[in-house]
Length: 517
Image (tube, rainbow, N blue to C red; front, side, top):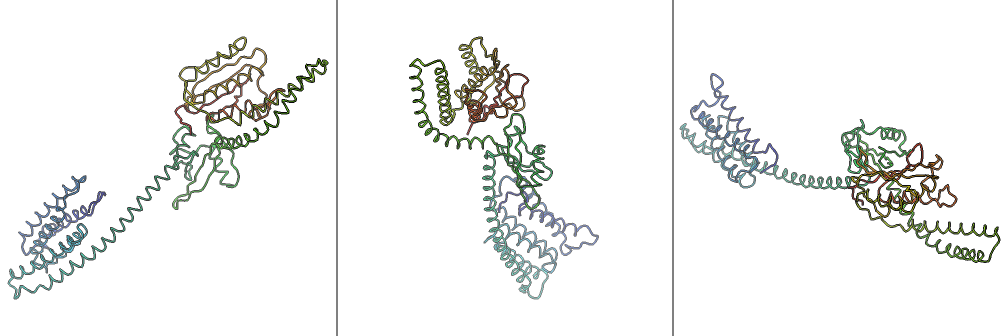
Protein backbone atom coordinates (compact mmCIF):
# COMPACT_ATOMS: atom_id res chain seq x y z
CA UNK A 1 0.00 0.00 0.00
CA UNK A 2 1.52 3.26 -1.20
CA UNK A 3 0.79 6.56 0.50
CA UNK A 4 1.74 10.08 -0.33
CA UNK A 5 2.28 10.93 3.33
CA UNK A 6 5.75 11.06 4.86
CA UNK A 7 5.03 8.44 7.56
CA UNK A 8 3.59 5.46 5.69
CA UNK A 9 2.64 2.21 7.49
CA UNK A 10 5.77 0.59 6.04
CA UNK A 11 8.02 3.28 7.52
CA UNK A 12 6.28 3.08 10.88
CA UNK A 13 6.84 -0.68 10.85
CA UNK A 14 10.53 -0.12 10.00
CA UNK A 15 10.88 2.15 13.03
CA UNK A 16 9.19 -0.51 15.17
CA UNK A 17 11.64 -3.14 13.88
CA UNK A 18 14.63 -0.96 14.72
CA UNK A 19 13.22 -0.26 18.19
CA UNK A 20 12.60 -3.97 18.90
CA UNK A 21 16.07 -5.00 17.71
CA UNK A 22 17.73 -2.28 19.81
CA UNK A 23 15.60 -3.16 22.86
CA UNK A 24 16.50 -6.84 22.61
CA UNK A 25 20.19 -6.02 22.28
CA UNK A 26 19.98 -3.66 25.26
CA UNK A 27 18.29 -6.31 27.43
CA UNK A 28 20.93 -8.79 26.40
CA UNK A 29 24.05 -6.64 26.89
CA UNK A 30 23.17 -3.92 29.39
CA UNK A 31 22.79 -5.91 32.66
CA UNK A 32 25.64 -7.90 34.19
CA UNK A 33 23.40 -10.95 33.97
CA UNK A 34 21.62 -10.99 30.54
CA UNK A 35 17.84 -10.98 30.85
CA UNK A 36 17.27 -12.68 27.49
CA UNK A 37 19.26 -14.82 25.08
CA UNK A 38 20.77 -17.09 27.75
CA UNK A 39 19.91 -20.34 26.01
CA UNK A 40 22.08 -19.65 22.96
CA UNK A 41 23.92 -16.33 23.36
CA UNK A 42 26.04 -16.60 20.25
CA UNK A 43 23.05 -17.32 17.99
CA UNK A 44 21.04 -14.58 19.74
CA UNK A 45 23.74 -11.95 19.22
CA UNK A 46 24.55 -12.90 15.60
CA UNK A 47 20.86 -12.98 14.66
CA UNK A 48 20.07 -9.60 16.22
CA UNK A 49 23.11 -7.86 14.69
CA UNK A 50 22.31 -9.27 11.26
CA UNK A 51 18.62 -8.35 11.70
CA UNK A 52 19.45 -4.79 12.78
CA UNK A 53 21.83 -4.35 9.84
CA UNK A 54 19.19 -5.50 7.34
CA UNK A 55 16.57 -3.20 8.90
CA UNK A 56 18.82 -0.15 8.83
CA UNK A 57 19.78 -0.81 5.22
CA UNK A 58 16.17 -1.23 4.05
CA UNK A 59 14.97 1.79 6.05
CA UNK A 60 17.71 4.02 4.64
CA UNK A 61 16.90 2.84 1.14
CA UNK A 62 13.19 3.49 1.74
CA UNK A 63 13.70 7.11 2.86
CA UNK A 64 16.15 7.84 0.05
CA UNK A 65 13.76 6.47 -2.58
CA UNK A 66 10.67 8.30 -1.36
CA UNK A 67 9.81 9.43 -4.90
CA UNK A 68 9.43 5.84 -6.16
CA UNK A 69 7.63 2.84 -4.73
CA UNK A 70 9.49 -0.38 -3.98
CA UNK A 71 8.87 -3.33 -6.32
CA UNK A 72 6.02 -5.67 -5.40
CA UNK A 73 8.30 -8.35 -3.96
CA UNK A 74 10.09 -6.02 -1.52
CA UNK A 75 7.48 -6.04 1.29
CA UNK A 76 6.81 -9.83 1.25
CA UNK A 77 10.57 -10.47 1.24
CA UNK A 78 11.08 -8.13 4.21
CA UNK A 79 8.27 -9.79 6.20
CA UNK A 80 9.52 -13.31 5.45
CA UNK A 81 12.99 -12.18 6.55
CA UNK A 82 11.43 -10.92 9.79
CA UNK A 83 9.78 -14.28 10.38
CA UNK A 84 13.07 -16.12 9.87
CA UNK A 85 15.07 -13.76 12.08
CA UNK A 86 12.48 -13.66 14.86
CA UNK A 87 12.14 -17.45 14.77
CA UNK A 88 15.91 -17.70 15.32
CA UNK A 89 15.61 -15.18 18.18
CA UNK A 90 12.79 -17.26 19.74
CA UNK A 91 14.92 -20.38 19.40
CA UNK A 92 17.96 -18.64 20.98
CA UNK A 93 15.71 -17.54 23.86
CA UNK A 94 14.70 -21.12 24.60
CA UNK A 95 11.75 -21.89 22.36
CA UNK A 96 8.14 -20.78 22.58
CA UNK A 97 8.22 -20.86 26.38
CA UNK A 98 10.79 -18.02 26.30
CA UNK A 99 8.05 -15.37 25.82
CA UNK A 100 9.38 -13.81 22.63
CA UNK A 101 6.96 -15.65 20.34
CA UNK A 102 4.59 -12.70 20.68
CA UNK A 103 6.92 -10.78 18.33
CA UNK A 104 5.74 -13.10 15.55
CA UNK A 105 2.19 -11.93 16.26
CA UNK A 106 3.19 -8.32 15.60
CA UNK A 107 4.86 -9.34 12.32
CA UNK A 108 1.71 -11.19 11.23
CA UNK A 109 -0.41 -8.12 12.06
CA UNK A 110 1.95 -5.85 10.13
CA UNK A 111 1.95 -8.26 7.18
CA UNK A 112 -1.84 -8.13 6.91
CA UNK A 113 -1.80 -4.33 7.07
CA UNK A 114 0.88 -3.97 4.42
CA UNK A 115 -0.03 -6.80 2.05
CA UNK A 116 -3.73 -7.68 2.50
CA UNK A 117 -5.58 -10.60 0.92
CA UNK A 118 -3.84 -13.89 0.23
CA UNK A 119 -0.37 -12.54 0.88
CA UNK A 120 -1.47 -11.51 4.37
CA UNK A 121 -2.77 -14.99 5.09
CA UNK A 122 0.47 -16.40 3.60
CA UNK A 123 2.44 -14.50 6.25
CA UNK A 124 0.13 -15.97 8.92
CA UNK A 125 0.65 -19.47 7.51
CA UNK A 126 4.44 -19.06 7.38
CA UNK A 127 4.44 -17.75 10.95
CA UNK A 128 2.39 -20.79 12.05
CA UNK A 129 4.77 -23.16 10.28
CA UNK A 130 7.75 -21.36 11.85
CA UNK A 131 6.24 -21.70 15.33
CA UNK A 132 5.41 -25.41 14.81
CA UNK A 133 8.84 -26.13 13.34
CA UNK A 134 10.51 -24.30 16.22
CA UNK A 135 8.60 -26.32 18.82
CA UNK A 136 9.26 -29.57 16.95
CA UNK A 137 12.97 -28.81 16.49
CA UNK A 138 13.39 -27.56 20.04
CA UNK A 139 11.74 -30.70 21.39
CA UNK A 140 14.17 -32.90 19.42
CA UNK A 141 17.12 -30.79 20.50
CA UNK A 142 16.12 -30.95 24.15
CA UNK A 143 15.21 -34.67 23.80
CA UNK A 144 11.65 -34.35 25.06
CA UNK A 145 9.51 -37.48 25.33
CA UNK A 146 7.39 -36.62 22.26
CA UNK A 147 8.37 -33.95 19.71
CA UNK A 148 4.86 -34.02 18.26
CA UNK A 149 3.17 -32.25 21.19
CA UNK A 150 2.47 -29.09 19.18
CA UNK A 151 -0.41 -27.74 21.26
CA UNK A 152 1.22 -24.41 22.07
CA UNK A 153 2.36 -23.76 18.49
CA UNK A 154 -1.04 -24.82 17.17
CA UNK A 155 -2.85 -22.37 19.45
CA UNK A 156 -0.38 -19.72 18.43
CA UNK A 157 -1.10 -20.49 14.75
CA UNK A 158 -4.84 -20.11 15.40
CA UNK A 159 -4.07 -16.74 16.97
CA UNK A 160 -2.06 -15.77 13.90
CA UNK A 161 -4.95 -16.51 11.55
CA UNK A 162 -7.52 -14.82 13.80
CA UNK A 163 -5.36 -11.71 13.96
CA UNK A 164 -4.99 -11.79 10.17
CA UNK A 165 -8.74 -12.10 9.68
CA UNK A 166 -9.61 -9.32 12.14
CA UNK A 167 -6.96 -6.93 10.83
CA UNK A 168 -7.96 -7.53 7.22
CA UNK A 169 -11.60 -6.79 8.08
CA UNK A 170 -10.62 -3.64 9.95
CA UNK A 171 -8.24 -2.61 7.16
CA UNK A 172 -10.97 -3.16 4.57
CA UNK A 173 -13.37 -0.96 6.54
CA UNK A 174 -10.66 1.67 6.91
CA UNK A 175 -9.91 1.53 3.18
CA UNK A 176 -13.58 2.02 2.38
CA UNK A 177 -13.71 4.95 4.77
CA UNK A 178 -10.56 6.35 3.18
CA UNK A 179 -12.10 6.08 -0.28
CA UNK A 180 -15.24 7.85 0.93
CA UNK A 181 -13.11 10.54 2.57
CA UNK A 182 -11.04 10.87 -0.62
CA UNK A 183 -14.19 11.30 -2.74
CA UNK A 184 -15.57 13.82 -0.26
CA UNK A 185 -12.26 15.67 -0.26
CA UNK A 186 -12.31 15.85 -4.07
CA UNK A 187 -15.92 17.10 -3.97
CA UNK A 188 -15.01 19.70 -1.33
CA UNK A 189 -11.97 20.81 -3.34
CA UNK A 190 -14.13 21.17 -6.46
CA UNK A 191 -16.75 23.10 -4.50
CA UNK A 192 -14.06 25.30 -2.98
CA UNK A 193 -12.53 25.97 -6.41
CA UNK A 194 -15.98 26.77 -7.79
CA UNK A 195 -16.74 29.14 -4.91
CA UNK A 196 -13.33 30.74 -5.35
CA UNK A 197 -13.97 31.32 -9.05
CA UNK A 198 -17.45 32.72 -8.38
CA UNK A 199 -16.21 35.08 -5.66
CA UNK A 200 -13.18 36.22 -7.64
CA UNK A 201 -15.23 36.86 -10.80
CA UNK A 202 -17.96 38.80 -8.99
CA UNK A 203 -18.24 42.42 -10.01
CA UNK A 204 -19.15 43.24 -6.41
CA UNK A 205 -16.19 43.71 -4.08
CA UNK A 206 -16.16 41.05 -1.34
CA UNK A 207 -13.98 41.11 1.77
CA UNK A 208 -13.91 39.05 4.97
CA UNK A 209 -12.46 40.52 8.17
CA UNK A 210 -12.14 39.37 11.78
CA UNK A 211 -13.02 40.99 15.08
CA UNK A 212 -9.83 43.08 14.96
CA UNK A 213 -10.93 44.49 11.54
CA UNK A 214 -8.05 42.66 9.84
CA UNK A 215 -8.91 41.63 6.28
CA UNK A 216 -8.64 37.84 5.80
CA UNK A 217 -9.96 37.58 2.23
CA UNK A 218 -10.43 40.00 -0.63
CA UNK A 219 -11.55 39.27 -4.19
CA UNK A 220 -10.25 40.90 -7.38
CA UNK A 221 -13.08 43.43 -7.56
CA UNK A 222 -12.38 44.68 -4.03
CA UNK A 223 -8.65 44.96 -4.79
CA UNK A 224 -9.46 46.95 -7.94
CA UNK A 225 -11.70 49.30 -5.98
CA UNK A 226 -8.83 50.05 -3.58
CA UNK A 227 -6.18 49.82 -6.35
CA UNK A 228 -4.04 47.49 -4.20
CA UNK A 229 -4.22 44.00 -2.63
CA UNK A 230 -6.15 44.24 0.64
CA UNK A 231 -5.32 40.83 2.12
CA UNK A 232 -3.80 41.19 5.59
CA UNK A 233 -4.42 44.92 5.81
CA UNK A 234 -6.55 46.79 8.33
CA UNK A 235 -10.06 47.79 7.32
CA UNK A 236 -10.10 51.47 6.19
CA UNK A 237 -11.38 53.94 8.75
CA UNK A 238 -14.38 54.95 6.65
CA UNK A 239 -15.57 51.35 6.56
CA UNK A 240 -14.86 50.83 10.28
CA UNK A 241 -17.19 53.72 11.21
CA UNK A 242 -19.94 52.28 9.01
CA UNK A 243 -19.36 48.83 10.45
CA UNK A 244 -19.84 50.18 13.97
CA UNK A 245 -23.04 51.89 12.82
CA UNK A 246 -24.22 48.61 11.32
CA UNK A 247 -23.49 46.78 14.58
CA UNK A 248 -25.64 49.29 16.48
CA UNK A 249 -28.53 48.94 14.03
CA UNK A 250 -28.24 46.39 11.17
CA UNK A 251 -31.46 47.70 9.59
CA UNK A 252 -30.15 51.25 9.25
CA UNK A 253 -29.10 52.22 5.68
CA UNK A 254 -25.40 53.03 5.45
CA UNK A 255 -23.98 56.09 3.75
CA UNK A 256 -21.95 55.66 0.57
CA UNK A 257 -18.25 56.51 0.49
CA UNK A 258 -15.20 56.99 -1.70
CA UNK A 259 -12.01 55.23 -0.66
CA UNK A 260 -9.94 57.65 -2.74
CA UNK A 261 -10.40 60.69 -4.94
CA UNK A 262 -10.37 58.57 -8.07
CA UNK A 263 -12.46 55.64 -6.81
CA UNK A 264 -16.16 55.27 -7.63
CA UNK A 265 -18.85 55.87 -5.04
CA UNK A 266 -19.26 52.63 -3.05
CA UNK A 267 -22.27 51.31 -1.17
CA UNK A 268 -21.16 49.02 1.75
CA UNK A 269 -23.21 46.12 3.11
CA UNK A 270 -22.24 43.89 6.03
CA UNK A 271 -23.26 40.35 6.98
CA UNK A 272 -22.21 38.08 9.86
CA UNK A 273 -20.19 34.94 9.08
CA UNK A 274 -20.04 32.48 11.98
CA UNK A 275 -17.65 29.60 11.22
CA UNK A 276 -18.17 27.84 14.56
CA UNK A 277 -14.77 28.68 16.02
CA UNK A 278 -14.49 32.37 15.14
CA UNK A 279 -16.80 35.24 14.33
CA UNK A 280 -16.09 36.89 10.99
CA UNK A 281 -17.86 39.57 8.99
CA UNK A 282 -18.60 39.72 5.27
CA UNK A 283 -18.33 43.07 3.53
CA UNK A 284 -19.92 43.70 0.13
CA UNK A 285 -18.83 46.82 -1.76
CA UNK A 286 -21.14 47.73 -4.62
CA UNK A 287 -20.09 50.29 -7.20
CA UNK A 288 -23.10 52.60 -7.24
CA UNK A 289 -22.21 53.82 -10.72
CA UNK A 290 -22.73 50.31 -12.06
CA UNK A 291 -26.07 50.04 -10.30
CA UNK A 292 -27.02 53.48 -11.56
CA UNK A 293 -25.87 52.51 -15.04
CA UNK A 294 -28.04 49.40 -15.04
CA UNK A 295 -30.98 51.40 -13.74
CA UNK A 296 -30.28 54.03 -16.36
CA UNK A 297 -30.36 51.42 -19.09
CA UNK A 298 -33.83 50.43 -17.93
CA UNK A 299 -34.86 54.08 -17.83
CA UNK A 300 -33.47 54.67 -21.29
CA UNK A 301 -35.33 51.67 -22.61
CA UNK A 302 -38.60 53.02 -21.22
CA UNK A 303 -37.69 56.53 -22.36
CA UNK A 304 -37.03 55.27 -25.87
CA UNK A 305 -40.49 53.79 -26.20
CA UNK A 306 -42.08 56.89 -24.68
CA UNK A 307 -40.01 59.38 -26.68
CA UNK A 308 -40.81 57.67 -29.98
CA UNK A 309 -44.50 58.14 -29.30
CA UNK A 310 -44.06 61.70 -28.04
CA UNK A 311 -41.91 62.66 -31.00
CA UNK A 312 -44.61 61.58 -33.41
CA UNK A 313 -47.40 63.26 -31.43
CA UNK A 314 -45.56 66.53 -30.73
CA UNK A 315 -43.54 67.12 -33.88
CA UNK A 316 -46.56 67.18 -36.14
CA UNK A 317 -48.25 70.05 -34.17
CA UNK A 318 -44.88 71.82 -33.95
CA UNK A 319 -44.45 71.58 -37.70
CA UNK A 320 -47.93 73.05 -38.15
CA UNK A 321 -47.21 75.88 -35.71
CA UNK A 322 -43.87 76.61 -37.38
CA UNK A 323 -45.46 76.60 -40.84
CA UNK A 324 -48.23 78.93 -39.67
CA UNK A 325 -45.61 81.27 -38.19
CA UNK A 326 -43.79 81.39 -41.53
CA UNK A 327 -47.05 82.25 -43.31
CA UNK A 328 -47.81 85.02 -40.88
CA UNK A 329 -44.30 86.46 -41.26
CA UNK A 330 -44.71 86.49 -45.08
CA UNK A 331 -47.82 88.68 -44.78
CA UNK A 332 -45.92 91.82 -43.69
CA UNK A 333 -47.06 91.83 -40.04
CA UNK A 334 -46.56 94.74 -37.73
CA UNK A 335 -43.42 95.13 -35.67
CA UNK A 336 -45.22 93.92 -32.54
CA UNK A 337 -46.59 90.86 -34.37
CA UNK A 338 -43.12 90.08 -35.76
CA UNK A 339 -41.76 90.12 -32.21
CA UNK A 340 -44.50 87.74 -31.00
CA UNK A 341 -44.03 85.44 -33.98
CA UNK A 342 -40.27 85.35 -33.33
CA UNK A 343 -40.95 84.27 -29.75
CA UNK A 344 -43.22 81.50 -31.05
CA UNK A 345 -40.60 80.34 -33.54
CA UNK A 346 -37.84 80.35 -30.92
CA UNK A 347 -39.88 78.27 -28.51
CA UNK A 348 -40.90 75.87 -31.29
CA UNK A 349 -37.21 75.46 -32.12
CA UNK A 350 -36.38 74.90 -28.46
CA UNK A 351 -39.09 72.24 -28.00
CA UNK A 352 -37.96 70.55 -31.20
CA UNK A 353 -34.37 70.55 -29.86
CA UNK A 354 -35.48 68.98 -26.60
CA UNK A 355 -37.27 66.23 -28.51
CA UNK A 356 -34.16 65.69 -30.64
CA UNK A 357 -31.89 65.45 -27.58
CA UNK A 358 -34.25 63.07 -25.79
CA UNK A 359 -34.38 60.86 -28.86
CA UNK A 360 -30.58 60.89 -29.12
CA UNK A 361 -30.30 59.98 -25.44
CA UNK A 362 -32.78 57.12 -25.63
CA UNK A 363 -31.38 55.74 -28.90
CA UNK A 364 -27.77 55.86 -27.74
CA UNK A 365 -26.36 52.43 -28.30
CA UNK A 366 -23.50 50.68 -26.57
CA UNK A 367 -20.21 52.44 -27.20
CA UNK A 368 -17.35 50.88 -29.10
CA UNK A 369 -14.59 51.50 -26.58
CA UNK A 370 -11.04 51.12 -27.85
CA UNK A 371 -7.57 51.86 -26.55
CA UNK A 372 -5.82 54.86 -28.10
CA UNK A 373 -3.33 57.64 -27.39
CA UNK A 374 -5.24 60.68 -26.13
CA UNK A 375 -3.04 63.49 -27.51
CA UNK A 376 -3.85 63.10 -31.28
CA UNK A 377 -7.60 63.11 -30.60
CA UNK A 378 -7.31 66.23 -28.45
CA UNK A 379 -5.15 67.88 -31.12
CA UNK A 380 -7.86 67.26 -33.71
CA UNK A 381 -10.56 68.75 -31.45
CA UNK A 382 -8.29 71.70 -30.65
CA UNK A 383 -7.70 72.42 -34.34
CA UNK A 384 -11.39 72.13 -35.25
CA UNK A 385 -12.50 74.59 -32.58
CA UNK A 386 -9.79 77.10 -33.35
CA UNK A 387 -10.71 77.01 -37.05
CA UNK A 388 -14.39 77.74 -36.50
CA UNK A 389 -13.89 80.28 -33.68
CA UNK A 390 -12.15 83.63 -33.67
CA UNK A 391 -9.13 84.17 -31.48
CA UNK A 392 -8.19 80.46 -31.02
CA UNK A 393 -10.06 80.01 -27.70
CA UNK A 394 -8.88 76.43 -27.06
CA UNK A 395 -5.40 75.59 -25.74
CA UNK A 396 -3.86 72.13 -25.43
CA UNK A 397 -1.34 70.65 -22.99
CA UNK A 398 -1.08 66.85 -23.22
CA UNK A 399 1.80 64.45 -23.72
CA UNK A 400 1.84 61.49 -26.07
CA UNK A 401 2.35 58.97 -23.26
CA UNK A 402 -1.27 59.10 -21.97
CA UNK A 403 -3.46 56.26 -23.26
CA UNK A 404 -7.17 55.78 -22.55
CA UNK A 405 -9.93 53.30 -23.35
CA UNK A 406 -13.05 55.11 -24.63
CA UNK A 407 -15.36 55.38 -27.60
CA UNK A 408 -13.67 58.04 -29.78
CA UNK A 409 -16.89 59.50 -31.20
CA UNK A 410 -18.49 59.70 -27.77
CA UNK A 411 -15.36 61.37 -26.34
CA UNK A 412 -15.57 64.00 -29.11
CA UNK A 413 -19.24 64.55 -28.29
CA UNK A 414 -18.46 65.03 -24.58
CA UNK A 415 -15.59 67.47 -25.22
CA UNK A 416 -17.53 69.46 -27.84
CA UNK A 417 -20.39 69.86 -25.38
CA UNK A 418 -18.10 70.97 -22.51
CA UNK A 419 -16.13 73.39 -24.69
CA UNK A 420 -19.33 74.81 -26.16
CA UNK A 421 -20.80 75.36 -22.68
CA UNK A 422 -17.61 77.05 -21.48
CA UNK A 423 -17.46 79.47 -24.42
CA UNK A 424 -21.20 80.12 -24.26
CA UNK A 425 -21.55 80.77 -20.52
CA UNK A 426 -18.04 81.92 -19.62
CA UNK A 427 -18.37 85.45 -20.95
CA UNK A 428 -16.22 87.48 -23.32
CA UNK A 429 -12.60 86.49 -23.69
CA UNK A 430 -13.15 83.00 -22.26
CA UNK A 431 -10.41 80.52 -23.08
CA UNK A 432 -10.54 76.76 -22.57
CA UNK A 433 -7.48 74.67 -21.68
CA UNK A 434 -7.34 70.91 -22.31
CA UNK A 435 -4.73 69.09 -20.22
CA UNK A 436 -4.16 65.43 -19.47
CA UNK A 437 -2.00 63.16 -17.34
CA UNK A 438 -1.94 60.07 -15.16
CA UNK A 439 -2.59 59.80 -11.42
CA UNK A 440 0.60 58.86 -9.58
CA UNK A 441 -1.02 56.45 -7.11
CA UNK A 442 -3.71 54.74 -9.16
CA UNK A 443 -2.20 54.95 -12.64
CA UNK A 444 -5.58 56.09 -14.04
CA UNK A 445 -5.47 58.62 -16.90
CA UNK A 446 -7.35 61.91 -16.55
CA UNK A 447 -8.41 64.78 -18.78
CA UNK A 448 -9.14 68.29 -17.46
CA UNK A 449 -11.34 70.82 -19.32
CA UNK A 450 -10.84 74.17 -17.62
CA UNK A 451 -11.89 77.71 -18.54
CA UNK A 452 -11.23 81.16 -17.14
CA UNK A 453 -14.85 82.33 -17.36
CA UNK A 454 -17.32 83.48 -14.76
CA UNK A 455 -17.55 80.04 -13.15
CA UNK A 456 -20.51 78.08 -11.80
CA UNK A 457 -22.49 79.14 -8.75
CA UNK A 458 -22.72 76.87 -5.72
CA UNK A 459 -26.45 76.40 -6.23
CA UNK A 460 -26.02 75.45 -9.90
CA UNK A 461 -23.17 73.07 -9.07
CA UNK A 462 -25.47 70.96 -6.85
CA UNK A 463 -27.87 70.29 -9.75
CA UNK A 464 -25.42 70.54 -12.62
CA UNK A 465 -25.74 66.95 -13.90
CA UNK A 466 -29.48 66.58 -13.33
CA UNK A 467 -31.53 66.15 -16.52
CA UNK A 468 -33.51 69.20 -17.70
CA UNK A 469 -31.78 71.51 -15.21
CA UNK A 470 -30.53 74.66 -16.91
CA UNK A 471 -29.80 78.29 -16.09
CA UNK A 472 -30.05 79.45 -19.71
CA UNK A 473 -33.32 80.61 -21.19
CA UNK A 474 -32.68 78.73 -24.44
CA UNK A 475 -31.18 75.55 -22.91
CA UNK A 476 -32.80 72.18 -22.32
CA UNK A 477 -30.61 70.91 -19.45
CA UNK A 478 -29.60 67.65 -21.14
CA UNK A 479 -26.08 68.52 -22.29
CA UNK A 480 -24.09 67.81 -19.11
CA UNK A 481 -26.39 64.97 -18.17
CA UNK A 482 -25.67 63.34 -21.52
CA UNK A 483 -21.91 63.95 -21.06
CA UNK A 484 -21.88 62.14 -17.71
CA UNK A 485 -23.96 59.29 -19.16
CA UNK A 486 -21.50 58.85 -22.01
CA UNK A 487 -18.59 58.80 -19.57
CA UNK A 488 -20.27 56.21 -17.33
CA UNK A 489 -21.04 54.08 -20.40
CA UNK A 490 -17.26 53.95 -20.96
CA UNK A 491 -16.60 53.25 -17.24
CA UNK A 492 -15.16 56.73 -16.73
CA UNK A 493 -16.30 59.49 -14.39
CA UNK A 494 -17.03 63.17 -15.06
CA UNK A 495 -16.74 65.52 -12.08
CA UNK A 496 -16.76 69.24 -11.45
CA UNK A 497 -13.67 70.52 -9.63
CA UNK A 498 -13.87 73.23 -7.01
CA UNK A 499 -11.66 76.05 -8.37
CA UNK A 500 -11.31 79.67 -7.44
CA UNK A 501 -12.05 81.05 -10.93
CA UNK A 502 -13.80 79.64 -13.94
CA UNK A 503 -15.09 76.10 -14.26
CA UNK A 504 -13.05 72.91 -14.34
CA UNK A 505 -14.35 69.49 -15.33
CA UNK A 506 -12.23 66.33 -14.95
CA UNK A 507 -12.77 63.04 -16.76
CA UNK A 508 -11.11 60.11 -14.94
CA UNK A 509 -10.80 57.19 -17.35
CA UNK A 510 -10.73 53.49 -16.55
CA UNK A 511 -7.32 51.84 -16.75
CA UNK A 512 -6.39 51.37 -20.43
CA UNK A 513 -5.49 47.70 -19.82
CA UNK A 514 -8.94 46.96 -18.48
CA UNK A 515 -11.30 45.06 -20.78
CA UNK A 516 -14.88 46.26 -20.46
CA UNK A 517 -17.61 43.69 -19.88
